Every structure is written in C-alpha cells, then in structure tokens.
Image 1 (tube, rainbow, N blue to C red):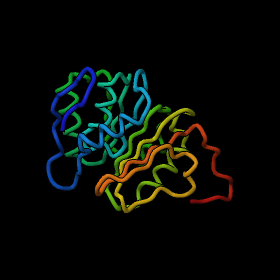
Image 2: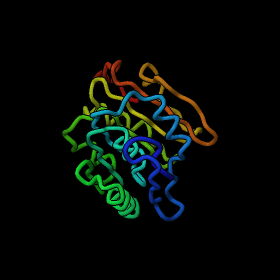
Image 3: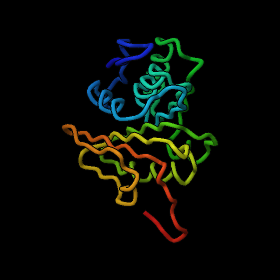
Length: 189
C-alpha cells in the first residue's frame, strides 16, 4: 500500500495489523482519485479511516487538512505511524471515536468525505444520512464511498450519484452534494 502521486508519491504506508481491516487497494485509489475533482486546498474527512490511506492520498495531492476517524485502537496507531512517516502532523487530526458519534458532534464542513466502512454491516446509508442531517458536507462537496458489491446506496440518494462501479468484491460510489434537497419532516430512509 502506497501513496500514488503528489508530494508523498511512492511512500509506502503501514497497514493495520490483523484481518479485520481491509485496506483500499492502489487500484481502487487510482479509480477514486481519477473521478473526483482536484484535492487542492480541500478539507477532507476520512471516516472508518483504517490506515488513513485515502485522507493521506488527498493530502499528497494538495488537500489543506485531513481528519481521520476510526474506533479501532490498531487503526488509530497505524494512522499515527503513517502521519509521522510522512511528516504531515500539522495537516492532520485523528479522532478515536465511533463515526456516528463524531458526525453528531462535529461542527465543521468538509469538501471531500471518504467512507470505507466494514463491508456488509449496513453502515453506508445511515452514515450518508447522518452526514447530511448534521450538515457535515459543503454544498459543493463530494462523498466517496468504498463498499461491498453486495451493498447498495439507497434510491433516495440516486440523484446525487455521479459515479458507481463494481470492481471485484468492491464497489465505488461517488455522490455530489450539490443536488441535495434535504429530507422532508415525515420522510425516512
């Protein structure tokens, strides 16, 4: 696992030890960063961050700040090791919190939000809903979701989807918040 391009190009990253975390492959990173717009001066949020490779790739490509959220102690330790290795401590913050708890209390808005939750745990749609309910994404922001090919983004979000493709056991779905109109008072997902 490595940084693909930018100021940290070709730097190898530490992976989370054990078999509970599935790292984003270099191929999927290439796919994601070929679809999303420029990262320059963007504030990024890496939810279910694992090793932090998506947020760190964004920093390498010019993002101004990357916030990492994960509840696993092993993940937090690995993110910290990777940040120290890349010497980008001033451009990062790490939160050891459950993603839902973080979202409910975070006052900032982000330009790019990466989500790579554990596969097949029904976390995708509830997390997207929380992001919008708590106004976490900038009005022109992008949400990038890596998920199992067996999990689907709710039809409610279909007007926001600008990219959706399956790659082996994984899928990448990208949503543009620009068209978000909100949930009505009696609407639930």
